[in-house]
Image (cartoon, rainbow, N blue to C red):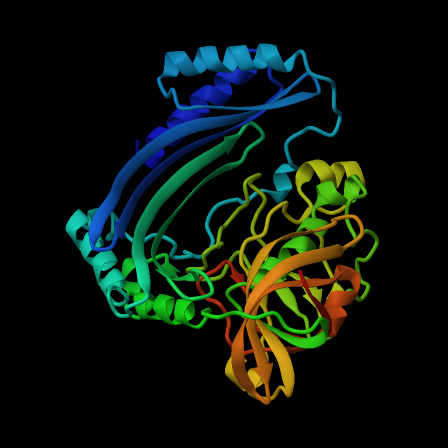
Length: 438
């Protein structure tokens, strides 16, 4: 189904829903195509191709709201589906805040081309994809006598959709994604360490295809013979590949739903300091070829670059239409796009080289954060640092604290943005952080 055909079908469904008793309605029609290849020890373990299409609909009927989805795309079946959904909606409780957004806030069309689609990806043959996965795997395969297994994974995805709302919104979007991953498992006297390395991009010709297996093997070898360290307060450096785990509790606390339910440790903190002055974060949906770039969000709200935290001061929450109305707050968006961190001047290696004693965290294992209080505890793995050098791997340790104080401990941000992720976060160093043995 091409874009015009999606719009035509969406218009028909919206028209039918209004005639059948809905006061407002929004429809999204989407298609996804994906390929996934797994190679284990030079043998293809799985090869999957998937083509999916479907329709989702939001119904507003007599001050009542419901959301439904189906993959039955014939017009007659869709009309029956909508009629049943409207009848079911009438059994729900009224909610005066369930209405479509103000049309003035919608994306109106136009804007810059964000360059999110690789036009060549759909024509790449299976052999090329298998060869890429094999190439990545062979960088590690049989390169160490202690190897138990090496696996590589290739995946790509092409998605596109259109959205139509009964109060005027019309918009279409699409993107592509391709990734390569290698995982390595080793045998040692103290266990079976394993690790991985991943690269991904929107365009195949921008994907880093070399060094993936080599890096995965190196990371796994470095984890051999881990040890605990003495519990206490340490300088902690967090690798940019995992630093996003520490920002997720903040994102959760910034959600309108969390604020309304009194389950946010950031209630009432707008325009107040919540972190070190070194922390500046923007949400930028208009970044060229960004993993999270978009012209509008999933409600049709026009994409706008906004500060989230400026020099430690909270500037904006993530507020969708529903909770914006319930809370009487301005709408921003209920979801993040590209989360961009301001960077420092030194690399992670330079930061590590300046430490007398500390810990480099390269992974988080389990744990949780209390969204209401900000108290957190996570298992960690990484490396002990002494006199500016990595001494040995560390595991069976916990990092604990409270998010309301933790971010004031930020002592330095690196210059090494993780461009593979929509959370473009650098490595970070924190001081006086509690680490304890399990």
